[in-house]
Image (cartoon, rainbow, N blue to C red; front, side, top):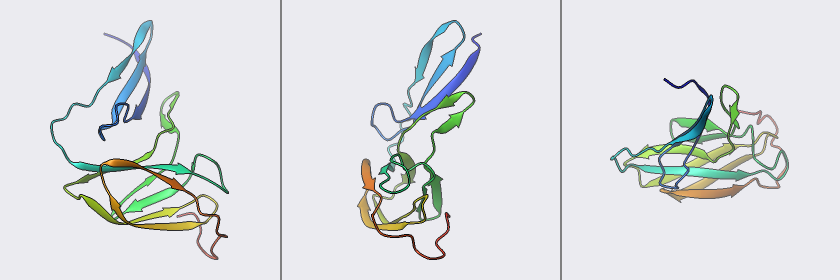
Length: 134
């Protein structure tokens, strides 16, 4: 048995399925490739901050009733900087993506095609009164 100590999650091969890389004591790292047969739709947002921080860390992203935050913290003694990922089942287009950037700027993107990494740059607009960080 191996003693695994850290892990990071990302779509390492760009197929829309989240993979895992793990470290082990006194053994090479392992890539656990997600080979699930289901071909559901997905969307990842690669955020670039312009006012808060360049990686968009702390941004809150909502698609429908799902939400996810941009973070680099993934597990014990590990970090990974990847896009904000959403699994979308049979949904082939997203009507509305809402992003609350860490400095309070809010952004909405409409009619987004799925099954891709979408680069999103924080708008240069000023903070909206009462927008908070949610």
